[in-house]
Amino acid sequence: MDIKFDFHMHSIYSQDGELTIDELITMAKEKELKYLALTDHNENKGIDEMIVKGKEEGMIVIPAIEFDTCLLEHDVHLLGYGINYHHPYLDGLSQNINDLMNDALKLRVEKLYAKYGIKVNLEKCIKEANGKNPFFNIVDDLLNDPKANDIEELQPYRKGGSRSDMSAVNFFWDKCTYGTDLFVKVAYPDFAWTVSLIHDLGGIAILAHPFNTFYHQDSLLKAAVDAKIDGIECFSNYHNHQQNMYYLEYCRKNNLLISGGSDFHGKNKPQIKMGEFGLSIDSKEILEPFLRKLNVKN
Image (cartoon, rainbow, N blue to C red; front, side):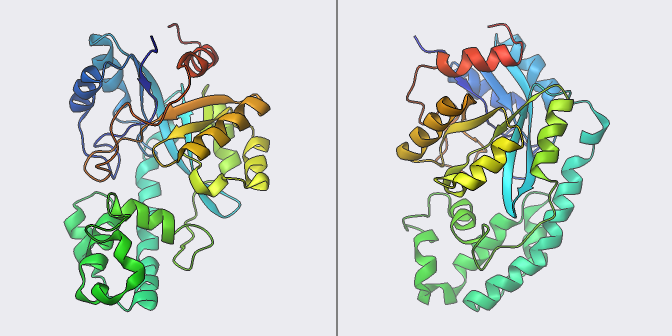
């Protein structure tokens, strides 16, 4: 019988997370997960609590953080597992990164207006977000504006559209990443530097949900490997089956660790369920090398 795990989830300590640590552990217990990792964005606050409460339920919680980085102009998420999460560099990191993201919001709203002719009230969106990621509010305001009724390009993200299941997330992936006219460069820490940091903190570095950004992009994948990543999150809710298999075979050929996780957040990504991420191989192929590298006893 496969052992159940989920190495990618977020709590209220992420700017876009919804659930408390207690709620995550309760859900993980219902899902019969044995191994899990809290991977809040650039944040270490919830890890101690997650480890303690997971242990009470017979779960093994791996300390982890999801870092925002920049690789060859691309915004890339990097998962650091088994790190010394009490290192002083990590204290306040999430606030520093959030400040960088918020500084870019004004330009992003200006680009939305230039492209679609819809003015979004940024101050209102920030206030309504109440400390969470205001991008979700920005996209909601954009899509709910009456002018959006006549903009064909926005229809897939509006209620009932083909990309409306996670409208803000899908809109970002489709319209705001590097190479699009809505892309806004944020001065995130360098990818290779962050890989080195994770290793210095005693952890392993896993490329998170590479999705379309790295799919058949040999030079970009090579740059990640040259930065000495330890593995790739091959199985992800963002990937289709072909992408899962592509990254799986890439890891097998290049002797990289294979990982997988749901990227569970809660209401902002309602179609994503904890413990479900398209895993189609024996969990041992992931767990045994992963835990051995982290020196975790199973």
